[in-house]
Amino acid sequence: QEVTLEVLSYHASAAEEESRELQVTAVATVPSAQSLRLQDFSFSDFDLSDTETTLATIRMFVDLNLVQNFQMKYTSLCQWILSVKKNYRKNVAYHNWRHAFNTAQCMFALLKSGRLQNNLSDVEVLALMIATLSHDLDHRGVNNSYIQRSDHPLAQLYCHSTMEHHHFDQCLMILNSPGNQILSGLSLDEYKATLKMIERAILATDLALYMKRRGEFFELTKNSQFVWEDEHHRDLLRSMLMTACDISAITKPWPVQKRIAELVATEFFEQGDKERRELNIEPIDLMNREKRDKIPSMQVSFIDAICIQLYETLAGMSEYCSPLLEGCQKNRQHWKRLAEECEKGLGNGLV
Image 1 (tube, rainbow, N blue to C red):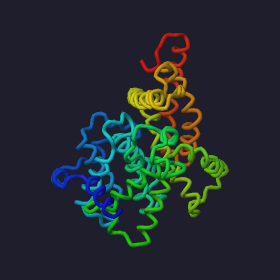
Image 2: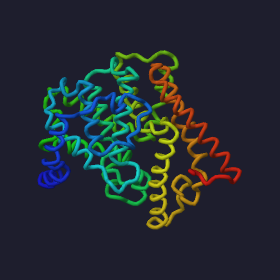
Image 3: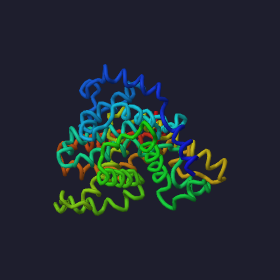
Image 4: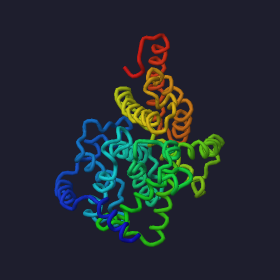
């Protein structure tokens, strides 16, 4: 088992040469958060190269004082970021490095522009940034339901939140790989607390868990009973922030939201094709490319069932988080218009 882990860890780690190149580039020219628009809720990665996304990640860690506060070796940070990037599969349309990077950027914007950093500890900020970047590591482009129904070996390892447990395991392996140990400056207690927080944050991105836990969070905030000193309340908040960032594409300017919806649809339809081919079942509408014209109405339903109340609640906690709610509401109007056109036979879903 140790040998297997050592081999896996070697292959999971980014090449040292690539890491050295990033260090040289990074030391000389890490762009400012302002020039990259990293604090903007309307941020889009479409114009950034892969190298720029890694530099932007360094910038976020520096500007949140994580490098300084936790005595991170610059070499380890560069190596770790590249290793995380390497462990996202390039053949997956949506759940890839770019999605992880965008999720982390939204967390950065919430902490900075949403002014939540003032209410969170340094360890919480560290855990949330590692978790957002790592939350979909080694995603296969299929959901938990597919993994379970296809009797995938991963389904035998974990009985629930299958992929999320796997994402955390991958995260842990990278953090423990030589050259990637960005947490080596933490005390033992800090280290244990950080890993526990990362685990809970990554598992929280399972929408099934979000649906189970959100009622309590909404009630607490609605009745002004949220207590910052209560660790259970803070854990709930961290979980809700993870989901808010994970689904934040729904809050982006319409051209960005539409383009990302196309990527999501591509991945879902590929799963639907696999279900027909390998499991011999008819996919649900969401995964069925023959039901493409239902995408706008399904997006409206997704916004109503999953998104709106979460962003309303966060905006209620801090008015500085309201751009997420406003973006979501605008996109609902766009999708509603498209849905009405589709009903009249004037559209085909995403065009």
